Length: 114
Length: 119
Picture (spheres, rainbow over the protein chains, first blue to last red):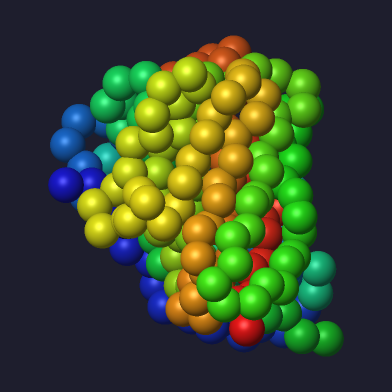
């Protein structure tokens, strides 16, 4: 079946540091890939997505490239801010019909300090 | 943009009582909504797929008689936790996919979640 593996957190960085959160997936065919962010006490918000190989999703300084050869979708940001502290979830969606489901990774907590 | 509203945002109830959580799509019609449960420091576990006008589809291991789902209209799905017990305490999140685009490569829109505490 489909699965998503994320690096375990928490990840603690100083402000302005470079961020990488690794994500790899297992799926047949060509899933769509997503990064969601969850701020404390809130639901999930879509951060970025990519729907085909070599696509790069980007938003708010974050980016991730859909690498089919390595089945990866690593999240990166060149300079993190305290306000980026949150839990980040990698997810994939595969066409299984009208109610296609998201498969989530376990989430990676990011803590950015001054 | 598309918004999914969830209510209440938190609720405390006594063991043995039932709690209803509402999920509304505010500016679009959602024939399908999803209900997730999130344990502390863990990922989201899909509980069930809520289908407008028909029965919900539950994931393996989820008790359908305990977690009642009703999707009576295109903008409202409800999750009722019946005879709640302390182990049902959790963060429950609903989501819906905007019909425009409407395929697996369209993102889900999530509610802000409901924190349920059963005492």
